Length: 402
Image 1: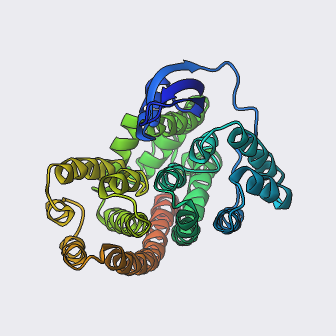
Image 2: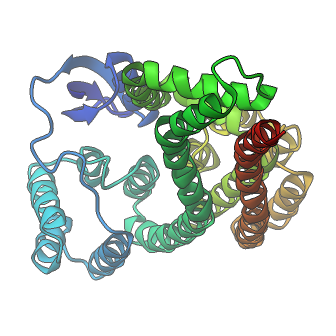
Image 3: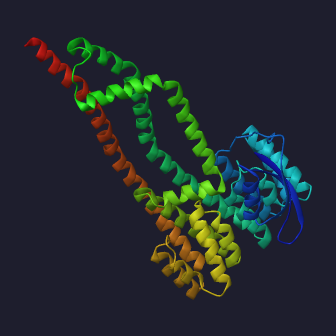
């Protein structure tokens, strides 16, 4: 749903705009997460008129970010730079978005707030870092680092998608084959078995189970198939809510293999984002607030929010991170070295490089494990069906022969 809002920034200056969320509470939570104090949040009767559901290629985002950074460094006004980049954009939707943003900026809207109106193009990480750059007067430097971060995130996503392609294809084929067997093959096999042994023929347990499952699937097909799609839709909708997203992220941190990858991705993002903000002169508390939304996991984000409170009360960040359930000891130790030597940004960049390499290795290892597991799974399924079919047929045929 699309909501219109009126809110106050941290300096109590007013701002208004639109935001997309699952419900009103989610919209207010998203605004608060962006550092705004919502005053009025109402549902809009119209969806976003501009490319609802569309997105922009990562390569286009990297080029745009680098070019905007160069223009700002050269002293070109932001609104003028956006107009220039709009003319050079190759994607029609992106050109349209940049045109709207340039008009908002010309009207006095902060760049980060203008970006926030298009969450399908500029995510929370991007928006929060741009806002931090505007507040610290280091927007050009932040944009340079953002371009690097966008490329790094794209590389990780590409590896994850590559690792998941094989199992998703195999799983899809398995589902289609299952329904084909249940709806087409098993009824024919049931007829053959009935012809050979009669309607009261005693069949092995696993054969009878497959026949019963086939009968059930065909009888309730009009309920089962739509029900599966409905269940998937409900789960996806629920995961988009603040509570559902938090529970889903907590589940990911409990799954044996997935937990390792999710944690390493979160640490890499934390390290690179926090280092970028610190090196650009942003304060520790502001950096933690922005970094929390950048790591992509609500559970760890909540942990960082609690860490920010501890830091505000006088603790060193390295001390707080050392007590974390999800950050390895090496992160707190490296942070402590950085705090002592005044090179926190440099140290964390090394941590980010290390964990990004670890993520790459973990994903490659996962892919090498998934393939034999899927082959074993499919082989077991084929073997069970073959035994369920051929065993009774052979047994009944021999009985007839005698």
